[in-house]
Image (tube, rainbow, N blue to C red; front, side, top):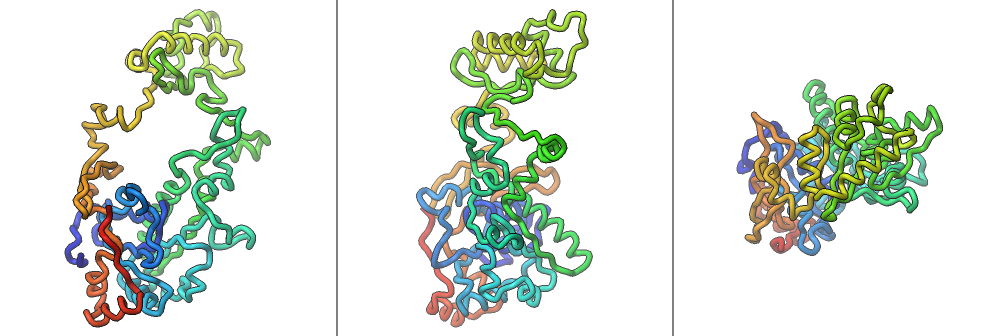
Amino acid sequence: MRRGEVPQFGPLQGVRVMHATNSVAGPFAAEMMAEYGADVIWLENNIFPDYQRAGTGTTAEQDRRNQRTISVDIPSPGGKEIFLRLLKNIDIFIECSKFGQYDKWGLTDEVMWQQNPRLIIAHITGFGQYGDPGHIRRPSYDPIAQAFGCYMGFNGFPDRIPIPAAPVVADYLTGMYTAFAAMAALHRVQQTGIGESIDSAQYEIVMRCQAGYAIKYFETGELPNRAGDRSFSFCGYGNYTCKDGVQVFLLTVGPGIYPKSVEFFGLNGLYEGKKMPQYCAFDAPEAEEYEAAVEKYVSEHTAEEAEREMLKAGIPCSRLLTYETAKDNPHYIAREVFTSWKSFSGRELTGINVFPKLKNNPGQIWRPCPSIGMDNEDILKDIGYSVEEIAEFYEANAIGKGPLNI
């Protein structure tokens, strides 16, 4: 597909993005921009294609939509030539190689800025672009970042070892933060004409998403506890199994909610003569009686009954849905959470729609995940290469092409 054939829609129409990434974080950052109208070119390694294509390739189908692709061996002489020429017409470039890889190839930030002084370069790694030499060279995946970034310590049951939060929270958070930083940098570049380099370290991103627990530790020395399926601070806050074996999650904390909960669970006498608190802490004198009342109620009702009646009483709660139950849920249907499209091979796909929703400049899905090197010729023609020159790149294995996706 040629540049002029890319549909114009969304708030990012006219923004040009290129990414040389695989796995989750980098592709997701680019995908968010593609779903809001950016023209996204995916530089996929023609020797080692994205491993998310393996098997049924469902992750690639979900997170590589709306993209054009060229399969290129960047460090090869021909690949480097193509890469540098592509940079001249790009606003944002995202890469997720191991630390120092682009510098070894002679493609430093400064070299890229020589091609395009306005370029925004986003580097995604596990441990960052600088720091302790023993750490920045470490390989990383999502659970490694969670382990090093103190995030895994929050997850699991208190009497068992910590477990990683799923699915790949560190990767998706890193993708979102990187996309936001790129948009912030783009705003500034439009004012100054000076490019930017973004250093996204996975472990730092998950550290940033830990509320006030770090501050609390540095003030008190107190470490957070693993709570499992319940809060480690409050009663009536967690996952409860109902009469039919289905779980319902409820949260009875807050000045507008806790009094309603006390009344709903038949505990009006619990605070007779005393001021009603905003919650029931696990170390409160009323904790055992309050928690027992909640357990008794859910054990006597199905999850559907419990959810309906508690919501009617103003208590925040939800049954635990699965894809099987969510697909028939009227709210999911009304908001078109699931949507369908066809792969290039004609395979009917159903997956997640574009979110968040924009009223005036909505995102859309206009193209499925491209096959390896599908747009090689069109992209190279757009930047001035002739048919003969493109043939030479194929001959030198600087670019490649693969079969249609499954």
